[in-house]
Image (cartoon, rainbow, N blue to C red):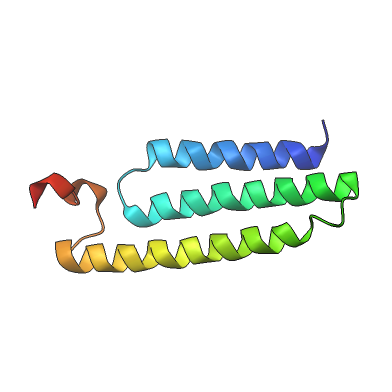
Length: 98
């Protein structure tokens, strides 16, 4: 197994571990999701470059664009929730309370 693949797998598991352990603030959860998306993006790019499939390389730009849109949507939701609940704590954002 190459060193790049080991690093990508460790980043992916680090993101999952961060989501499971750091569920206090919404921003930390969003950052862990970004780490998951970036590790998947690097893995897809690495796989496509190894197979020399140049026709599908444009899909990487689509994936990168979608991850940027996901990040902006997550941050806008975090701002809206922190304004309504006066906190970014996940425990204070129970939807069933309202």
